[in-house]
Image (cartoon, rainbow, N blue to C red):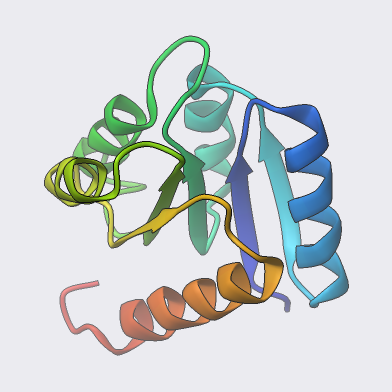
Length: 128
């Protein structure tokens, strides 16, 4: 069974590009274009959430915080990405409960490597 990724990106072109690349890399991809959709799609039990910071309704930090408090989603690894200031963004992302923060632009290969890293770590973590 392929690893299931929830990709949350509000820009359609970027969402389609990343989803296509991840599917080509062998992942099953669920997509969402805003925070509310992300929270609803998370009920589909993805293995990893790839979350953009800037979303039209709830920002990525709020989505991450909500995923961390829900029993069914608290153990899902979260990768957040953004084009914002790297230092401040990374600290805020980690504080919100993300496992990894990436600065855009993110190459497809970099994204796949990050997914493998957090997914592997979650499977070996006795707390998850």
